[in-house]
Image (tube, rainbow, N blue to C red; front, top):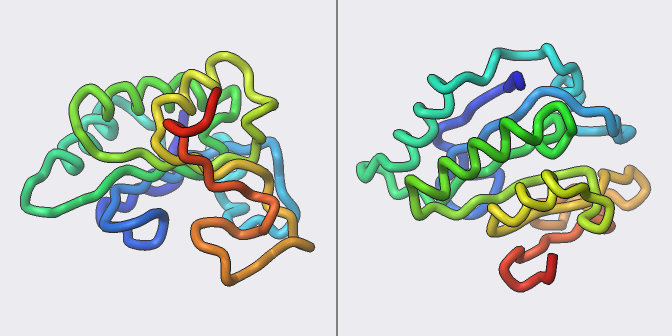
Length: 157
């Protein structure tokens, strides 16, 4: 998997101060996507254990009161990305108490087993493709009204 960008101090993609990872690669290609630069699978940089360990250290840093980790893209649940994302989220779960937010263009009802396993590692998932005709700049954490904010613990998956 490649990643497009890592932001160690983010206040835009989820509540509080967060570490945010934008993965590279997406086959959904929503018209008017805000992040088309992340669609190419080879965009950005290889995501290795070095980057993963950096994220864990940042999340464990007690000098900064980070609330959690956010992952978006590209498409974190894309078949080419999901195994690496699953490994990363398991590592975050094992080594921190931070919450995890994930954005996906897929709907939960359409996910396969590894994608569902990955979603279950999250606290919050924003699902569904961006739909230009349903764009609403007043929505929190999502771009169009068809996208749902899902509290994973309260949702039977």
